Image (tube, rainbow, N blue to C red; front, top):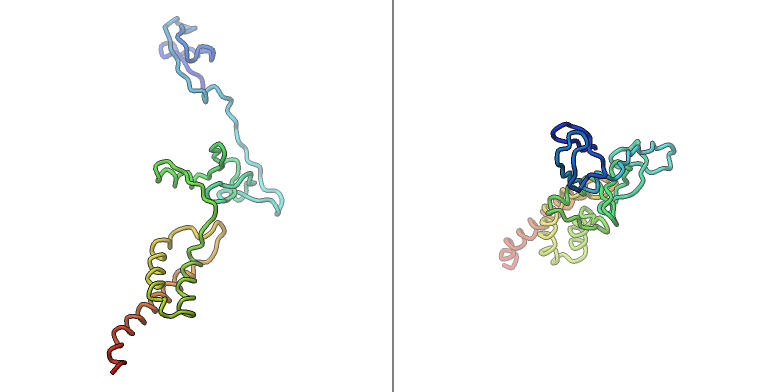
Length: 188
């Protein structure tokens, strides 16, 4: 980008940026303030195409070769999608999510598989320790409501575990309710 004199539209040489000087065309007094990024040489990025089947491709551009993975979510990124944040590399989606959290990008070390967690929480106590389901069934439903829309994994997987855990936890709560309701009749 070139800064021009606002009066005569003559280009101002880069040596005159961030100083008080005179326009080379009309001799009008100038003070051109330029950030260092303006003076930095612009790199044109042309990501390489994926040529072999064993090369990793970009999550967002499957035809482009991956050069780095996102430090936040782990997705492979091409040179176009890579947002270099100093020590880490962030994908556009994680950057956008970071904006929702007042501009803070949290480093994520792993992906919690809530689908597996809720299914285990609904299934194992029911199978092994039935009285424990009084606590685990409501907890399972709470986790399902809270995390059912979170990304399960960076690789595509089926979402069947959430509905299965919902059915198990709901059946457990109904069963507990029936036992509590029918308990006085069973004692007589």
